[in-house]
Length: 110
Image 1 (cartoon, rainbow, N blue to C red):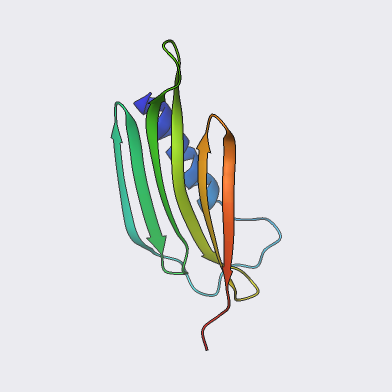
Image 2 (image 1 turned 135 degrees about the vertical axis):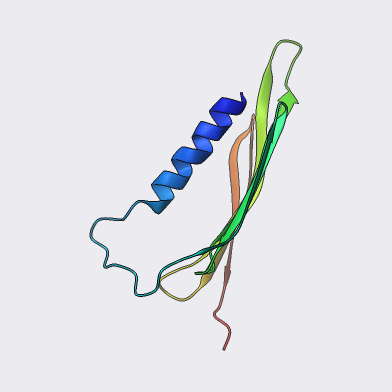
């Protein structure tokens, strides 16, 4: 279980860091300001924050669905600043009922 979670997190990090085709290179490099992770036998947590205003927090907990079945229940949020200058925040829960996101958009501060 731990190996699967670690591999998934590593793949996510690689995909997020990969250059996007068709986009001009960033004028300013983006730096990781904060990065924490903890993986245990019954779940995981991680969070990070970057210098461009992007952040993500996530927690996964092993949940007993029935006598014979367990599932990973995940909750968290992520935030980024769009090309339109608006700040987008998505909070979510993913469990046996599917992925359930809620979006919030903030106007830029003047």
